[in-house]
Length: 237
Image 1 (tube, rainbow, N blue to C red):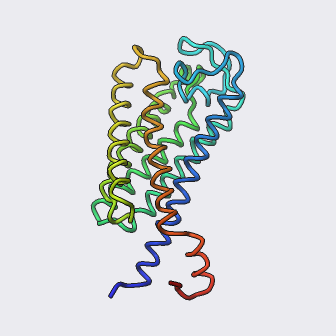
Image 2 (image 1 turned 90 degrees about the vertical axis):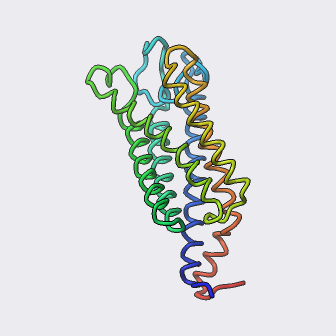
Image 3 (image 1 turned 90 degrees about the horizontal axis):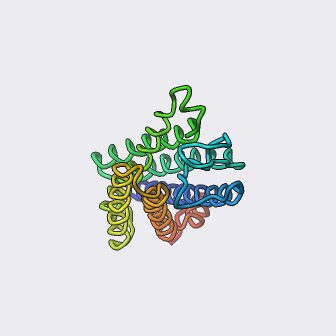
């Protein structure tokens, strides 16, 4: 016979992780879209500009392009919130994983949260170049992009414990793998290809998986039902 309290706690953890994943993806995508739309001098290019350009608080020439992001505070906030929510979701998902996978997933979650925090706090800007802190931004970006896609692969392989369909698990492995390939290719060809294309491929691969996993977990766990059961004090069938 299954341990009902333990099963219920696992369901609550999965539901909370699902909400964190979906909210994180929405905050990031909406923040990026609004920040890009606010950029008018010149127009923002999704292929020629980095995502980090949206968080640059300074206007003027930078890295061979003209940068001016009026909504930089919004974008930097979105970076930090996305990282915190992915980190929280990773910690919650660890509850249903075997010990080794739990340690890996939770460790990645902490690293991802720290990486996004560095992106949002230490901006890619002329000022950061001048004061010698730009490497912290690059470190954060590398950890965040490689970490999120590695997380997608690890979680995709744990699909039975996450109670998601095998096809969704395979999608995590494929999307995470594609994101890692794009990230490594981008780092290796940093000045040879349009900067936004490979970078966005690496970022959006995880965001798509984030929404996919979060959506299926919401469907499986039905958090509203769990909340009603908790408030009533008795499980419902």
